[in-house]
Picture 1 (cartoon, rainbow, N blue to C red):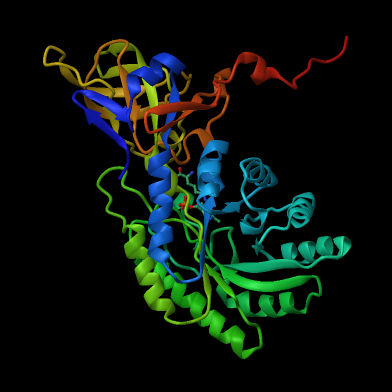
Picture 2 (picture 1 turned 120 degrees about the vertical axis):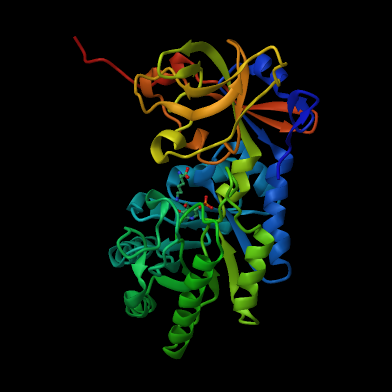
Length: 417
Ligand SMILES: Cc1ncc(COP(=O)(O)O)c(C=O)c1O
Ligand SMILES: N[C@@H](CCCC[NH3+])C(=O)O
């Protein structure tokens, strides 16, 4: 569900006409809906109800400060994977005590900063990382709260690039090794074992893999208790999918109720790290048709957004709905188009084989672009990154200025004479 809907033949973001936003801020333009972000966050929060829980929004999905701030105001925690993400959370008014730090490659300076601001927990992904964290905490004279990210060897049945819970993936500590590594963690004097964590992949469209992983984690927690290691929280990661096309992922309420049923009355705080299911359908990417280019083989519509703005179609062959901002009248012929960007790669496309009635200058909206959209954008081909706007009822706020060439080259230098 979202707040992007047609009123008559015009697309609106909440109560604002998307055409007006494109006129005011230019294209390509990311448009986010505050109401949608809030509704998606609350869907999780309400679904987990009275069970002790913390929803740690995965910052990587969309790290715009306004997005983080909207969620922080609702009481969200945050899942980060770099110190840059931590600084963003802090700048957006997030609470360090609700931050968990995931990722396979944490550097010592990142650990230091996270300990300095007092994050909630580190999700440790290897034995070597455990040693490094213990050393850094010892130098600082503190104890670091840790969970081990366990790799439960469960097939998330998603795109191989974003499947993370199989033993051949680089993530986590193999479940067969986990018990031994927990005992080691418990013996290290500057670590405080708090939780168990897993994250098996992204864009999951069924509950079963999550529940299989949960069963393995609960089993591990029971075995650890027998050895005297008491686990206080269970972090199931993110990964719940969204509907881009025909997928029918479970709603957060359905997913959460299955998880709670499995947990029963065990006194475990539940942590979830949703990214996509909060942000994806809270955003669109607005782009303008620069040229129509019919050729013998294909009809191309060259648009002003490219793979540097939205990488998912090029990287994963991902499909995202593309709709007109103003629905055309019958005089415009519907054709099958490939929507391509200006970048010098054949892999630069936003969508292929789309039935659309288009004219030069028309505006299009790429749906479900609020997650892994701007966050994965780059300056490839020296293109300035898009502006980002957040709509809040009838108001719109620029939440990131369009980049300029001066921004792009700031910090670069040529060799001295
Ligand atoms: C550790 C971790 N947590 C949470 C997420 C968020 O996943 P999603 O956006 O699929 O909810 C990811 C990304 O897949 C991740 O790597
Ligand atoms: N970037 C991916 C998701 C990656 C998840 C990161 N852990 C996507 O757009 O689908």
